[in-house]
Image (cartoon, rainbow, N blue to C red; front, top):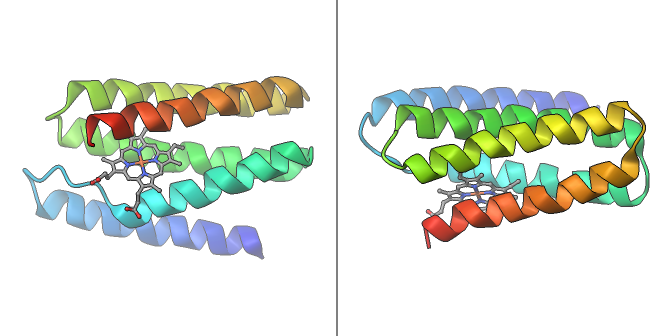
Length: 129
Ligand code: HEC
């Protein structure tokens, strides 16, 4: 049930994102609800990794990847900030890697990658401070 709700939420957010994204052609404001949902999913991933809940961690990593694809798209469309675009490309790459190591039953590696994902979040936020 939790996952159905998550997917619906992601759908609503992505729809909202598309609408607002195209309505403000030149605006570079990122959707704060999207970021809040990313944070929530990232926290959930962190605790699932800590508790070695591999199946739930895989679901979180997939959701996170979808959400970070939206961030990437945001910076592709509003290509005002090349540095942010690069970091968002890396974020997607990192979540791919994280998911892959979970599929290969390497939870320890996934935990390490999760640390670099948090560094990636911070790297992007620094640009907008
Ligand atoms: C490529 C850029 C980028 C990446 C990657 C990114 N963010 Fe953000 N994030 C932003 C921007 C831009 C804002 C809005 C900053 C502002 O307007 O002050 C933001 C805001 C936030 C906020 C504040 C929301 C609020 O309530 O004001 C949270 C929480 C957040 N991000 C979490 C995350 C987490 C967790 C990750 C990594 C998994 C992440 N972000 C990755 C660009 C990014």
